[in-house]
Each structure stands twice: as C-alpha cells, then as structure tokens.
Length: 557
Image (cartoon, rainbow, N blue to C red):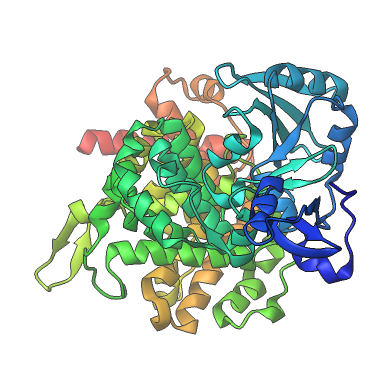
C-alpha cells in the first residue's frame, strides 16, 4: 500500500480504499479487501496497488489531545457516530473507541494521563469510560471497548446503522467502511447494518428515528419494515434505555414527526400507550384539531417558539408574522429564557426535553374527561388535574427524578391558568391583578416560565391558521406581564419578603400553633404582592383584622 497521498483528479474517491493500476483507479471499496476483490473481478491478471484516498476533515482538539496519550501499538480506532460526525462536519460530544482487547485498562490509563475521571462501564463487554469536564461545565465522554467480534470489521457489521458502522484508524487516519456508510451519509439514508439488527436490539428503532430527525435523513424502506417487525421486542429493553432515547428525541428537532414515526413503526403503543387515546377525540371551537393532532401541533409550535427565542435570533429572517411579534413583545427576555432552559433538573436530561414531555402529556386525560353540555359544547372538566397524575405516573415508570416528576405535575396541572388570563384580557380588556400573578407563580413552583412557553405553543396549536393577530397579541401581552413581574419585580409581586414569621403571629396575637397561622402568613404575602401591605405593622394589623373575620365566619357557619 502507498503513503495515501492523493491528487485532485481522484478527489471523488476521498475517504475510500482504491485499487490502482498504472496510476489509474480501477476499483474502490470501503475496506482494502473490498477494493482488491472489486479489481480482481475485472482485472484478475493484474496486481493492483491498494491505497487509501484521504478525506479532508479537521480533528476536534479533544481528539488530538487523546491521540497524544494513546499507546502507539494499542490499535485504537475511533468508531461509530463520532466518525460520522467528522465526515459531516459536526462536533460530537462523545467519542467511542474500539480496541482489540483491554478496553477498561486502556480507558483507565487514558484517564490518568488526562487527569480525568474514569469508570468501568461494562465488564462483560470490557468497556471503560473517561469523563472530561470542560471549561463551560459540560462533559465529554470517551468510551473504550473491546471489539464485539473477532475483528474490527466484524465489530462494525454488528452495529445498528451503516452511517455508524465506520472506523477511523488513529495511527494512519485511514477509514474502514465495510457497509458503505459514507455513501449512505451522502445520500442521507438511515439503513440497518443487517436484517436482524433491529431484533437484536429494539432500542435501535428509537435511535434510528432520532437520528433521522437530527440529520434530516430518511429511513430506508427495508429498514422501516425490520423496525416494525422488531417493535414487539421493545418491551424487553430496559426502561432506562427507552427513557433516554425518548428524551434525546424530545431534545432534538422535528419532535412531532419523530413521535408520528414511533407510532407508525409500532413502538409508541408499547412504550406510551396512554397517548394514543387522544386520537380522534373531537373538540369544540376554537380548537381546529382533535386532541392528538392538537398535541402534535403544539409540539411543532413549541419548537418554533423556542427557535424564535434563542439568543442571537434575527427576527428579520422569519416570514412568520406571529413569531416576529414574539421577538417584539418578549424578545428582550431571550437571555433569561435561555438560562432557564439551560438549567436541567437532572444533569443527564436537558430541561428542553422535560418541557416537550409536558407538552406531549398536557392534554392526555381529555379523552376520559370529555363531556357534551346541553348546548352541544364539548367540555373537559378537570383534564388538567387528572392529566397531571397521568404525566407523573409515566414519569415514575420512566424512573425520572422526584424533581422532574414534580415539575411535570406542576406544568400539566396549571397549564390552563395562562389561557384564563389571556381570555379575560382579550374579551374584557382586564389584565391579571398583582394578586393573581403572585398566585400563578406560587402555585406553579419553579414551572412558571415553562407554563408561559407551553401556553403560547398551546394557543397556536389550538387555533392554527384561524388565530387572529389580536388574540395572539393578547397572549403575548400576558406573557410579557408575567415575565416582567417574574424577572423585574420579584420582590414586589412574585416572592415578597416575609415581614413576619409564625412565631411572631403566635406571640403578638396569642395564638396556638396550627393551620390558622399558615393561613394568616399566606394572606399577608398575598396582600404584600397586591401592594396593600408594606411593613411589619401593617402586616400585624391585617392579621388581627383577618383573625376577627375568620372568627365571625366560624360563628355564622
């Protein structure tokens, strides 16, 4: 084999192994053997030169750093998605390495050399992980694993999709591509490595849908059929792996399209069956969709809303008038919204994923609460309360943290409150009072910002093209009022400082410890938020009057 240098006339073969006879390419392949066999089929009497045509791509700094500490004779190859990302000029947050043996031992030595953390990941598969903390607080993961088969090529053929069945030899920067994954990358196709790749690990169905959405690829027809055939086996996959794939889907682009794909492939009924009860459940105006179609539309509009609120978004580039109005009315809070969404309740799952999960479940109990009144209007009484319980149950089944489960419950339970504010403003020109704003944030806990974002997506998913500019402006005005109070007047309205504590009330009013003390303290805070109480003396005076009122009501009851 030659030194791997190439010239401009052979650039079409970049990243491929070629067979050359008298300086001309006569065959090509993803591996040296493939190139040799291809040449022998037509030029069996000649002895071709097999060489690799380099592909030009920059190496990320972290990979260059890792290469300096790898033993020269370890036979380490970068494999999988990280190679795919190099070929598509993406920056991968994770790097998988394949070695002939001693994956855990090599990971430990690399971690020591980089002064990073190490953990054994899978003793059975001889896999170790190096965890590098970056300057911005994020993490980069380096996984070292022994070959899954006897050779590197066997390892690659046993993977999920051809676009991930790639290896980069770090010693000479040659690429091994036995299944023509690079060609599928260029063609933007997700293709299974083998007919039984999905049945061997049904979690790959979710991964394929996620990667198709993330890269804008389509799933090969045969692969789709193999996915459908393997869907029954999804129940044998650990709930943690299913959860992680679902939350990665929710963190990426085209969420609603991905959910539709999971449904069509037969996996959604097996992992979140309660969602499908929303199909075909009709609603009265102003809804233009049934409950399921509305939910998917809300996901689309949430994605668009977050895009329009991202930092450095140029409002001049959008042709959507409603998104332009978002920038105009609440665009000044972009940085704070970004900070809110960058603060996850669990370090392994983005805040965005949890918000989309709430959007997916916000109307989940409309089917069971549906009723029709005497005027023919369809109602869904308490669907928010029951839906909060359903969302929390799914969160527990997915083994989400207590904080995540609580946040989901708060979002779903309170998701109608914003709409009440907007409806009153639009119809009566009456904005929410300071006391109402206080109660909104008090009852929503840390979910207030999430509720505002979901509500804006919800109203667009409700009315679609029938949403008027006047109605949308009313919703944006409510969003502006709530955000302004939350971030610019927190001590006045959202969370007034305590002027008294329980001991003060017990001592000053000669009370006994009990529920009445808590009621008085909360009533004081509400009136602080309303601007009616400003100091300790006013708080005590109010408490005395309130105590008399409560006593009179008790006597008259």
